[in-house]
Length: 183
Image (cartoon, rainbow, N blue to C red; front, side, top):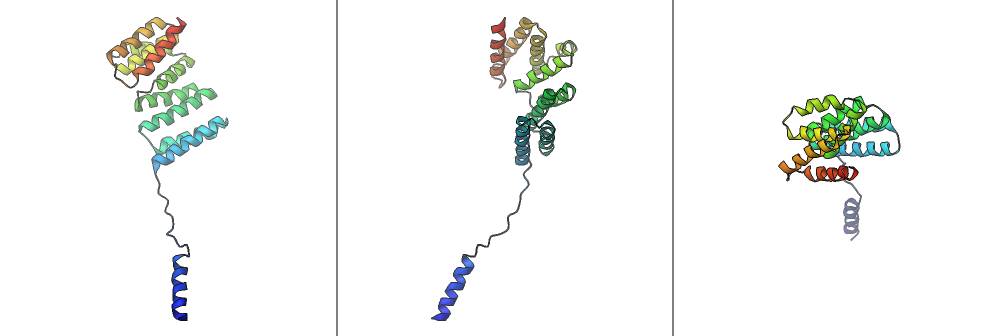
């Protein structure tokens, strides 16, 4: 009886001892990039700009050439614009547009950057010659930013009419509505 009780106690002790397999950390670049972007946004909210820039750069390096990278590059560009470096922000916004051209905010950010760099007129001349739909969107926004609101609204409205099912079309229509309120 004592042997059976000792055996039972030993078995229950081993079952309840709490041994688990060691945790293996799995590197997931997308999840880590998302984490670093969020940390960068927190630093930005707390006005710790250098740390925010570094976190956005880490996020970009962990997840290059994806749609999410466009968001990270846009966040980096916005930070550069906020601290007064539009020349560095320009590269970020242009890269964000190359990675994902269906976010209207990227067009507005790039147009603001061109305005601060005083190169709006040269960019208008550059985009005028292009037949690309996305270049027309940029051209319309640049016209509006330069003060030629009617011409810009006309171009953006033409884009909306030719591509009504494009993901960016509702944002363009909203921007047209806000712009025509002021006219």
